[in-house]
Length: 373
Image (cartoon, rainbow, N blue to C red; front, side):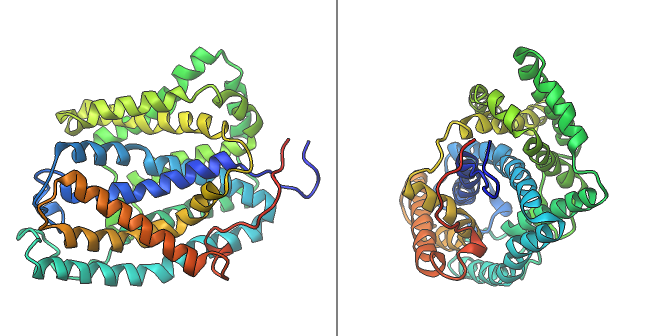
């Protein structure tokens, strides 16, 4: 049993959530090197490779879904720790304020970088936005959707529905034979997601401030999963420790789909709905294997991940314009953009955020001994 007044630290889940966010750098950095992207991106780089088409598809297929599942888990933790009023205050501080402060800076940087790309002659002539301001949430869309999900969860909890009935159903499900469970979870979640992708295509919430029904459903399913998992965390932990292989299976399916024209066909869309479910459940299994009190350098990466994701996008865009005319292979340019972005973001976190008043606001946690059950 845990001592009264203590809160267990889920270090492994923190690591996986941070990894999902940090992969955003790898995802956004790959776009100029996708062959024949043409008018869909603001930089026409002199080098490309089909590898980056596969990389973009694979990362997009599971990264944010995994993040929302873990965000739902930790959101429920915050609700129990702080209560209904404290939950809203905490979520507003962590989500709304960064969105309000970062968005004007991101939009300003975006238009300046596109003007630079246009003047440098590396922008495709048929790229529609050219140098105009784009009133879109950009990579910060996840803050808008996450706060929306938190508001919905808060309203349901305030009305007396916190998800405990769903947790009882999940607990009963966990008692079925493991083989049936392994087959059942991807089907129960993956089939509706796959059918929705077949009907409405790729989820693109970054293009509008107005929440899209398809996107709300797609990512909301994972937030709800994480929210309910908090209530059955002890039983889930025992089970998912053996489910790490599902992450491998999910990645294998993603590689199969996104390395061939199947990714643009209905069967590929359907299989893509299975990928985030498999990867999410598998990563939960990996997360619960991470020992408490992770190493200092890993804790630093975890605490910096929120800041890195907030600031990385304009840096990535600028670096892509800078190297666009270089004669380097696509892989070398990509490696430089990714490594330079991480270096700048981590240094700025260490100098600006870490141990400053911004630290607790942006994810830096006080040092405390790990709590075990």
